[in-house]
Length: 124
Image (cartoon, helix red, strand yellow):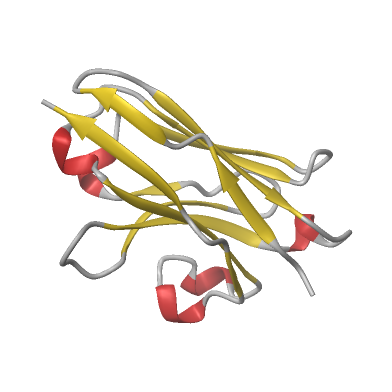
């Protein structure tokens, strides 16, 4: 059974940057589409970004376009989320997720595996 472990969260001031990493166990990482979701206090979990199996087909939440960049390294079984120009409204727990249902990569209900999350706090 696959496991996903996020890292890289922390506290930054508005305008700062963080890079989240998600390390996956198992030998079949490359067959999964990968996504990042986030959940702010009192809000529902929302899609942030996704990437296809080979690193193409990237998608972003409109509010993070131009600021966040998703990438993956299949040789390292790792997916990344580079977050620049962070805003207080980006504050949330960020979750990594994996799915074989690549057409539903933006649907939290279609994920096969979830990490436990990493907290990102952006202060103004």
